[in-house]
Length: 126
Image (cartoon, rainbow, N blue to C red):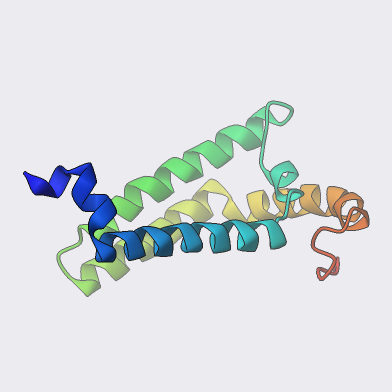
């Protein structure tokens, strides 16, 4: 019963140290995320203005999630690799290369605006 005790939590040095480590890790993650923000990526994603692209993206996302679960549950490495290859074939048939090209084009259209604001200035457009 003492495991759930607030008094134990505040008096146990291991739990206090663990809490401090979690807080420090959270702060460091927030700093990393802020430093590596890439808001222009938002505009690469399909939206209501591109319904066909949005539908294609959704179908591929669904295929990815379905395959990911099957790969995790695969009974062997060979079965997992077979499912990976099947996924790559499925995405190719669904037009992943065309989707990637369109999303890259959308991204490159807005990237200069964000670079002027100081984001991802390390990236160079092709």
